[in-house]
Image (tube, rainbow, N blue to C red):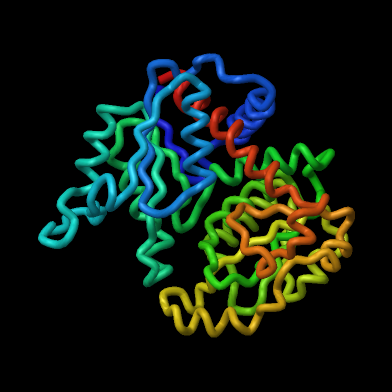
Length: 335
């Protein structure tokens, strides 16, 4: 079978995506059956993780496999990703060599790379995860790069399917919220791709200056014309939430001030009123809240919402386990 990677959700065609989601639903109600017996998955983290690390490691074990879990700068050293570089700096090893060697030990590699954080034009190329995929001889899974988080999108899709009778035409609001430490837009980029593939009516709500990546937006708008999905952008949270079935809250960095922490903090400070509370959600159509977590309580979302009946956060995080199990089975079953 040809080598398959999951760098972005579109690496799964429509049938494969449907198969993975159907298998995910089945795996929620039964343990694994040893599908990965005798197999190993390597996990490399270049920055922190809670749900992704725990769900992937548990998924491998439930399927009868083993995990090699490594964290940068504590379990191994800095790695060089630039091709043709003269390696006289801090990194003593190239990803080319690390990927080739680790491919001898494991049956798949799951990577959470770090971004340099200085230039969006550079970081959006996702060179680090692309380098692993280029040089590994086993499947590479993206555990959140600068541009994409496909594994989160799978859990998001399963959650949406469980809560809505049909995704086609259903209203989803993706709402920027203020945070003192905003995340990357990777979760939102992958969610937007997933929602448009499902034919949803998507409303993007964010203050001026917090537009998503232009290339991603162009691609999903092209896709929307094929699937019948709708995408609109709003500068008002209230306007975007009104009539929506699901509100997905997420902080993300402004690309205008990307790499300039002082300017970015000043820009965010003008929008502290962008948060989710019960009053806002009441404008929706029995609206439910989703958030990829971690969530800053009473900054991004109020306690009343997070601990109330509208919150889907725990169920959404729980769906990381069956979707990860299904994805591993799909990628490794025939290898």
